[in-house]
Length: 210
Image (cartoon, helix red, strand yellow):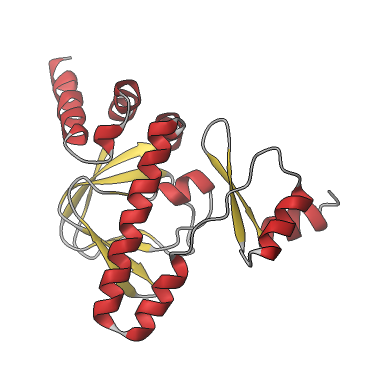
């Protein structure tokens, strides 16, 4: 149907205009574009809730603006072309921030399977690094302009992640987490990423008898 192809072309063109989507391989970008949904959020609508259910989509601001809040404090404002929700989507952990429409906004929504396929190659890793690094930098700058408390609090979120190889034993991962005083470790997988957390160690390893 002509209108479907037109919509697909518009979505693809939109993504290609915005970094870091423009760095993705053409097939990865096409995978995302084919699965896109569009949703409207009125100003003030909560899209994701901090410590709420894990995100089911990679969201991208199509029009309008979305603000990210940590414990009620705005730490970043996302504008056209900027993504959110993917850290929670890929880890299956509750969102670290609340995402709320700052004004009437349209978002593109991409489901988990297509997102994992698109981000499971070197270009996808660069995508994740670019979005998270940029978000932390802006969060630190915003917090610095606000209060000294906000600066130190957001700075704690900006520590480099502990990355462990997928063939490392549970014992060795737990030892690294203890030595580096980290509450979680990132494990690159064949498709996507996994997280080892204190809760996983307690509930699935110790209590589970592994």
